Image (tube, rainbow, N blue to C red; front, side, top):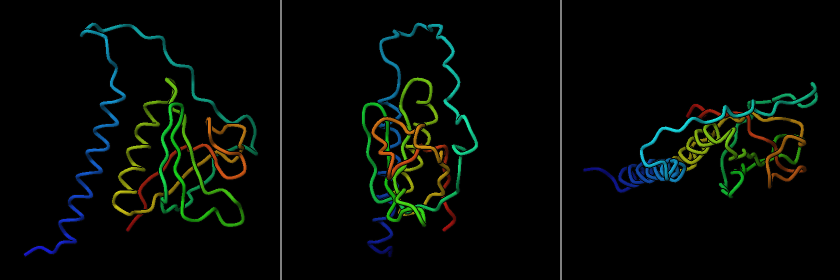
Length: 149
């Protein structure tokens, strides 16, 4: 006989997968009527301009909160990076970066649902922060992966 906590874990995983599917469905283009339309190639992603704004990490983060807005998504860790006030990371949801942002959002949502930490790579220069990412406590998310158990 399986314990209640075993069923609770399965339910949590199912809810996480459902959230990922819903995010993907909401991002699916509408109104094309089955017609394939040519699209202009998106501009290259914004990159740091000097060595002081390079990507840093990984920083292991246990996710405390996830926020989603019309122009970006963010998540907050339970602890800041040692020696800083940085504990939030965000990514833009504009057309040029929406595919990578959707993948990162799916991974963050899954990790949060499973109670697992993620390893975060981020841009150290706050000039590259997405909308809503406060310069004193937040940085642009460059990538992440699930941490080992």
